[in-house]
Image (tube, rainbow, N blue to C red; front, side, top):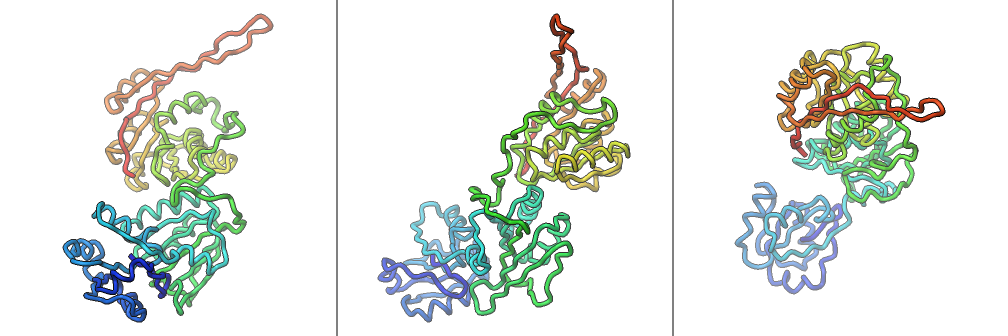
Length: 418
């Protein structure tokens, strides 16, 4: 497999030349086939392009005699065809000569380092997951996000995503037609993120979303996933102070058990969570403190509580969406959740949630009364009773236990879609 950086092929390894000079079936795009002929070092027995689709073309070569030379863009092992071929033909002898990847060429064209960048491919079937990942990294404040754009998610669609995320502190550097004589470079800035007139969004491009204060933070070891800042152990172990209406707030000790049941650290990157009957928003905000990439929607029907949620989020430096409405009125119109916490609204709220969400979504709910707990258990069979006592000083002579009201926590141990 031979990589092309722009219109220029990688050097053909010397050990390949004897075999290729005797004749090879060559597979690739037309411009790569033409460029290979200029080299005049490969005797081409047959030329095959990808008009039938890459997968079908490769599978059709399984009985081909002699060597097959596949021409690919950039580094074929980096979001390229090596993965497909290895999955389809795990025992097939495969040699790869990579050119620089489009990602590395784009950063080089801009004179930027990329050891601190998160790489996301939006090619083909990855487009939907890419949109979720981009939003997650923006929420998490990642310094550089490099996106391999595609017809399914082009530069124009990408600017809409960034504009909708309301993150004016970012700019977008675009490099199109990378490594060719028609290479284009453009800078798109917030808050409007308007496309330049000269930029064609139809061609393949790399878009690099950068914080205006971008600085090197160290390598992201797993491209397209959670940045290094997520999951860090907080230096201040004191529970956050959330404003609330009197004592109408889920206590910190109860929140920790609820969050353990939801296990947000195992959710897919950028997944959506509903906090239903959110009250002060304490449970959802605690989750965001662990996973700021998650898409949290707090649904609350009381106007005062909605104000408290917004103020608590601002104080914690976290981003979420607040919906002032009853869950039964809006469930069908919200982004589908991967996990749900029902803290308020009683059985009406839980039943409204269960009627609309994916059966595989994770659900946890709390109840303060036996009647509600019994009703919840019909839907969420994993149920525990949590009783917390605080150790309180009783004058100079000792201490006593001061109890919270007992709380039932019910949950559904469902799987989730990655």
